[in-house]
Length: 429
Image 1 (spheres, rainbow, N blue to C red):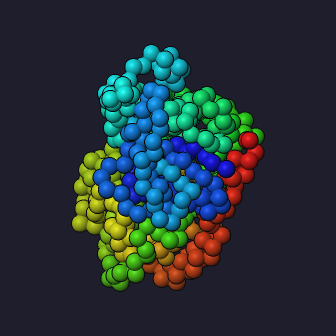
Image 2: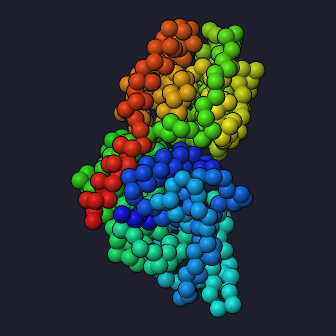
Image 3: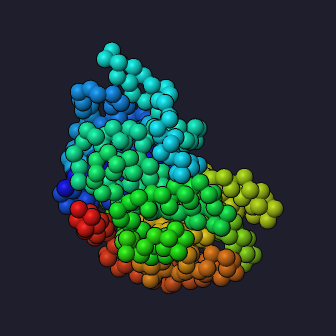
């Protein structure tokens, strides 16, 4: 079986949990013998050794021409090919006018070859001309779909909705829409209508939908009008091998560290973390709170920390990746995920893998598969502060949470995820 998979991030070029999920998922699928052609936004700079074969989509002509594959054979997983496609992939695109716009759109920034073939010069970044870049991505994917042989299309989130629809139209192959996050997660009730419409379009045109949790499935059914029979729930997992290995613990006994690791956006609830931190510090002044990540709420969060006069106990690290993440986990005594709406949430599993006790929001998909962590309603700042204090004050509780986490993780692995996804592929053939 060969799958045309559509995404926009993959380690080491990631900005969130989706890239991590794609890595674990594709590796497990490939181990099961599924061949994957992964169409990816442009990878900039030098690549590092991975389990993929990388093929540059920048050389794919959008006029009839002999196709020549250009790429690198990576060492230890030959079932996955990558086609990096330059594209600004961002939210604001109106699906209702998609067909009309696609028909009228002309390829801007095209490069002609000696044979009068041309390739799209796309950015590979986020932002910019959202409409044109999303359409260009879909157009390149359609070209790939005409040239490649595959059995099904698998698109990750709404940014690939139109590309998946185009690939389905061109090839006649079934399309699976994988919902990792929804506009209601990102924006609450104040949704961007265009983004919502794209999501609804993608799930409506898809032959099947994969949701990362029952929490997400319920939103899809109730808010998007998709039949529950069309949706399969496949929880994410965690990669035990890790990106750079697990560092030994370097925790300090005289000062506890509480970690927030994620995008500093409305969805992730950073403001609730800061309010709880202020309450904890009234009783334990020797605690340091660390916020690692970036996002549109960062300036406001810095101002709030200053207003609360807790700056000496609070550190903003900005965006972190790779070895830095390992170092932060090694130093942390507790990880907190206070998300307002979290479709799944891989970061708590990564923290558990590194023997860091975890507190998570009840409004999260990962809460469905872990029973040994402390859970709170995101809005209950008092309860969150009390649970933070309990973990920091009582070493026996912290040790028991770590031991229970190890047992839970034995049951959570990407192999079972790949088995369920393969079953979906078989059902839609």
